[in-house]
Length: 299
Image (cartoon, rainbow, N blue to C red; front, side, top):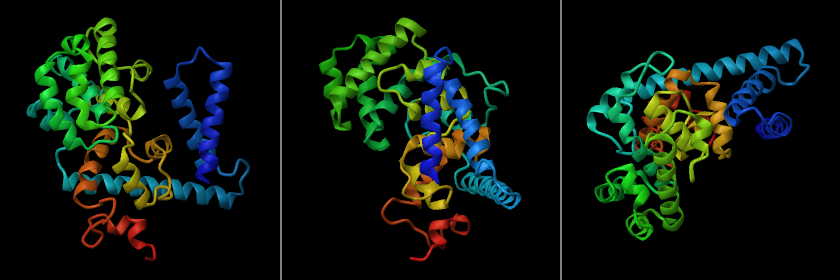
């Protein structure tokens, strides 16, 4: 089922890109996500019987209700939705997520925008590396390169030497330097609030782009990191063997209310560390066990 859904998404995107090149990639994604949920989930198959249509709708509705329950449980566990990457001051990290979304009038402060490049750097370093190590490494990195301009002008060997503990340090250092150079030259040193612009930056994929849009500008988006992928699979939103971030982003964006998406992803990271670990999840006593398919399935 999921293979068919994702095939629809990839093939559809190819067709749209081939014949309508004037449409931006992020707008194409939005169109395809909408089509995905309307055609594949809500009306599977294309010409269903009334019974099949009712079952599909019930399944979709049940998934949204389960997602809302998961959001509430995580809110109770972690009232403050805190980014695991410590890129900004404590004042931001404890208050921003009580603010409205961008559509509801949220405007980031000049101070926050000035620091936003640091989250981009940390997001890139976090690939195949723990957030805890990234936080340690970036203390030294930002002491040596305190501004986006200094990072853009920094010696690549100095950057490599500092970020080496994060792994893939040649590629990551070059990506960081090049991305900061683009931010300085094209965006005044500020991370842009535009998905297409973010995806054009070296080393930035949808996961980092959604993280930046959510944390800096409060634009809804699902950050499909390893914790989100693992736990949402265990909860039963899709088969547990699904590991593709794009699939997970598409699926979960249809189940979680937009204004909750960014905070949900922050909270689920902490939940994945405290309770739903990769190797030995603490199922007994888990606050989500009543809605968890993994817990209820035969062992």
